[in-house]
Image 1 (cartoon, rainbow, N blue to C red):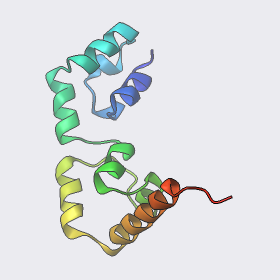
Image 2 (cartoon, one colour; image 1 turned 90 degrees about the vertical axis):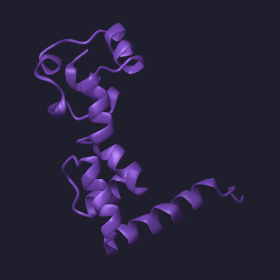
Image 3 (tube, helix red, strand yellow; image 1 turned 180 degrees about the vertical axis):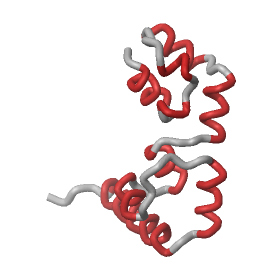
Length: 112
């Protein structure tokens, strides 16, 4: 598979992966090996970032759309995410409450 597809499946931005990874074709077996026994570079990326929008949104407990509404369009490191949590700007608070409300609605039984 293409490196971009493999990076997406691994949950890391392609631009943050090593040049060898970006230049190679990854087989399904190689992907499985990376997932089951991540090399140091992958473990470090997962721990410290930069992280994809999906990971950032999950760590902030908001939706990806909420990230975009908050102006977050680029990958963030773990330190940047933690700083944002500590700062807790108004948009983040608003997005968290909106996301929590939408999740409640999703689990509420449908009345018919």
